[in-house]
Length: 346
Length: 154
Image 1 (cartoon, rainbow over the protein chains, first blue to last red):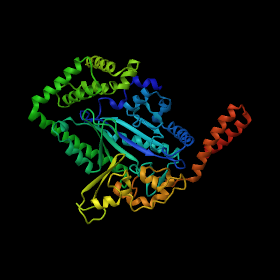
Image 2: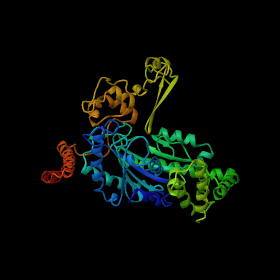
Image 3: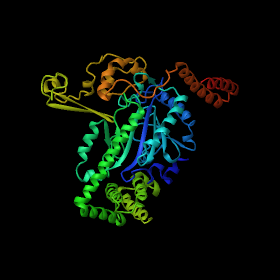
Image 4: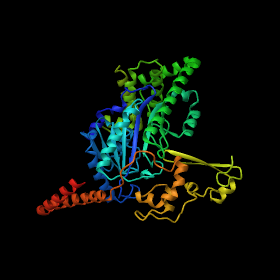
């Protein structure tokens, strides 16, 4: 796989399969690890980071999940390409110079020298923490037997930030919660969820804004609890939120059905006909259509297209697809054109 | 709600500390806030509130990180920091994570010998590249033999 192949393939975790996919876009587990004997990335010298990078890349190639994969350094990427991988959830921070190794289908990836030496990530579409769990730990095992991890019995896996120490494990799902937002019950839910040890972020993770009614829900606690418990408890919390969202949507349709239907169909109409669409507008309108699909108003076959568009209308993706840098207005025109074109594919 | 620090006066202020994906809230009365230098907003790192029973003079002997620096950024410099600051951060970890002790998967004790071998392998690989670049093929061959021995041993 080459870097330039990425734009031509849709990541497997973005397809429309997966449980509860009308509410859960994707599931993810991330493990943070560091090597013994090398300073952590925020304090290490360049030479140390190079050594770490070589050691880790070598170990990663020993995992079959990364056969025919792709490896790149953000140092060698253009600003556009860095934005591109960020849009694909392969990278979350723009700040550090990192190495990234991606497995086929972009289901698994390893980031080297971000905040920790190693960040292993595994994604699946829909609610599927159960499928991701064994995969991420298989990779962890291979890395562990080829590297010397920094670990202490009482602290567990050592991390740069104490918020990750212990299991170094973060389990999260991307949830679409328009019902709770429209009924203004979302704030109460967020308070409840946070009081139980879970955190909520926007579409692109830490530091990102809430867009399109998407919420990333993840565990906060990584220490004093074992890995299976984290996965189980987080899944339980997410299922509660899914149930609540479904109940809220039912209530919403009972009490304001016509208004909601109108909003959904108007959004659908604009997406199918607009000549200019900003990213913000696209994300908001597609959220309404996504709700329409979720409540059975709009045909389910649209979900696949919406998921595809969610990624490919993002600014860097759009520009890479069209093969040129575009200013905001041009992007808005191209975005609208592309959306009209794709929505004809049903 | 009583002040989290003096437990006597009523808390009139609350500070929510957000670190990465975690947040924790402390409720404080005006006097304690003043004593801690939080009034007026002095830019004092709020994390010090959570570390108030720690020894600020500690320094990590492996990477040079001082506890004061750690208190500002809440980022460790290396695994050695955990050995040096360990005792002092246990109560902090409890406040942050609800527990100071790891209960998840465990790893065999860090094998220092293996670690040293792995570091040597990296050095040899670099030396090999240099030797080949210089066309010093005899040296390169010797390095390759040494590498093979080490890689088998690890």
